[in-house]
Image 1: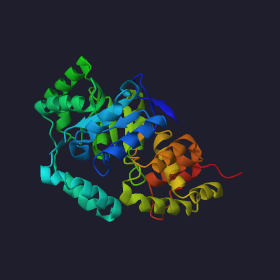
Image 2: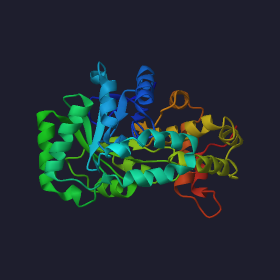
Image 3: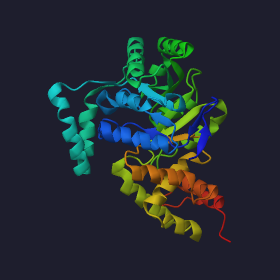
Length: 342
C-alpha cells in the first residue's frame, strides 16, 4: 500500500481511502462490514462517511467496524445534510431496492432521486451542528472525529462567524481534530482563492470529466491543507464514458507509441491505473476515496496505486490533454511534456 502525509498534520494515511457512501445504501450490513474489513486488512487506513449516507445508517455500521481499530484509522464524516429516517413500511423496502439496483443497474438514477428526496440539505445552524456531531460520535462509537466536513455548503455558509465559532470550540475540546468542506469543484476553487483560516481539509470530485481543479490545488500546496478526492470514476454510470475517453486519447496523433500501447492494454486495469494515479501524482491531492464494496474492485485499485505502469511524464501529458481539450481532441500545448520515444 502507498502511504502519504496529510497536509500540515502529523497524520500518515493510505493514499487510497475507502468511501462509505454505499454502506447501508446500495449494500447491506453484512457486505458492508466485510468490505471495510477487507480494505483495512489490505492496509487502507482512511475511511470517509457522512451523516446522510445509507439512509442515515452508514455511520452506525462504520462504528461497528471500527471496534478495536479506531486508533489506527483516519476517520472523516460530514454534517449539513440531515437524513430523514424512513417510516417502518418504507424501511422494509430498502433491501428490495438494494436487490433491484444489483439486478437492474440502469435504475440507479431513479433510486438516487428518491434517496435525495429523503434528505434535508443546507442544515448549517449551530444547533444542527451540535446535534449532528453528538449523533456522529455516538453512532461511530468514538470520542473524536479526525476530519469533520461541511457537506455541500453554500458560499454564504462559509461566512457564518457563529458557525465557525462553534466549530472552533469542537476542535479546542478535541471532539473534532480538523474542519473542512466537501463540495463541488466550483466552490472549492472559490475557497482556495481566499481560504478561511478555520478550514484545514477539502474534499471534492475529481475524475476524467473534471480535472481542472488540480491547478488550483497545486497553487495552494504551501498552505498545509488536506486534500482528498472522491468520485474518481465519475460514478458507475460513467465508466463506459471513461473508457471511451481513454480510447480517444490513445488515438491522438501526438501520443507516443509506448503510451498508446499502455492506454490500449489491460482494459479496466488501465482505467484504474490512469484515473487513480492521475489524481494522486504531482497534484497535491493526498488521498483518493473510491467506493470499493467488492473485493475485486479493492484489489484492482490497490494494484493500480501500488504498481503503476505509467510514468509521471505520461500522466502529466494525459492530465494536460484532458484539462484543456481543443476542438480536434488533441492539446498541442501538452505535446512538449511527453518525451519522444527513443
